[in-house]
Amino acid sequence: MAKVTRRQFVAGAMGAVAAAKATAGDLRTPAQKPNILFILADDMGWGDLSCYGRPDYKTPILDRLAAQGIRFTHAYSAAPVCTPTRIGYYTGRYPARLPVGLEEPLLARSQMGEKLKTHGIPHDHPTLPSLIKAQGYDTALVGKWHAGYLPNFGPLRIGFDEFFGNMSGGIDYFSHKGTDGLPDLFEAEVPVERIGYVTDLFTTRAVDYVKRPRNKPFYLSLNYTSPHWPWEGPKDIAFSKSLKGGADYVSGGSLKVYGEMMRNLDTGIGKVLAALREAGLENNTLVIFTSDNGGERFSYNWPFRGQKQTVFEGGIRVPAIVRWPGVTRPGVVSNHPVITMDWTATMIAAAGARPPRARA
Image (cartoon, rainbow, N blue to C red; front, side):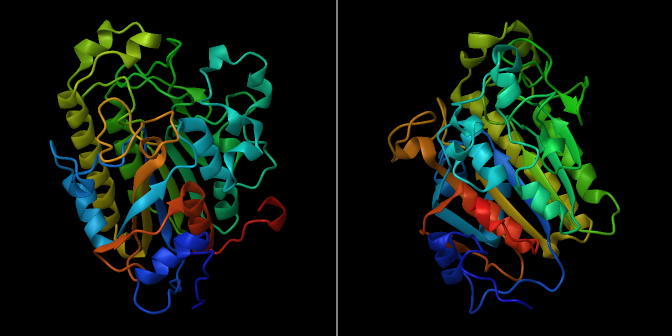
């Protein structure tokens, strides 16, 4: 078994030190390539999990995941808004290396104008899914994309075999319409209609994907839109019908509704993790959980200043949990800094791939 280098596990110079101190002895990769499950929440604040201090509701599933692996206290997003962080995640590079990574964030498709043709990840750019796919993995994205629009850009153009989710930044949880009022739910590159609370739809698709029989490892990026606005709990369909879109989406909500969204998200993640266990895959799956940026109106960012769209700690400091049985030790709390692109490098290394030097 090959020894994992500083760049390879929770990669990046400081991140690897955190992982090295969090394990017993040398870090080593399993002989069998691991499955990879990356779970990305949307606009979740640093303290929005009860294991990070949230006082008014509990997140037992993610708390248990943290107890089974490493909980990072100094994890940072690549940017304080959606699109740049996702560009950093998909490419492993600082977001500003690409024009689309300078958008803060990418507007709805109908609002893009000429940028629709230019702002996205080029097809020939090495990416996390393309590098992992080249190592013999099945690859899938379930959930939010927000890194360029069809017909020129999309998840299937950068190495994902499958895609079910939304293309834009925020959609209504029941109507599945974007901020421009247009439907935004896709199967591959085809618009589709589905009935249901979108967090639950993404959970169901992820469970089905994990349970699917296959003869090679998988990499699943599960990019929830929760707890991003519009703030709607799983029973708030009447409220959803009252919204007109646009600015309407960022009004309303409450701490109670936010708690319902978070509990629903936590439960959904529990179903996906249970599917791993039931399929006999838990012990050979690297699971990473984090958020794309800091929280917004109803988040618990104490003791930090700021929130989403600011570069204060509250806008870029996020929860992050890593569990890799046989590699990480349970119950570890790491204070070493890590950033979005460290997760990219970690997953590339875990799959046995290497990033091209010219793109470093």
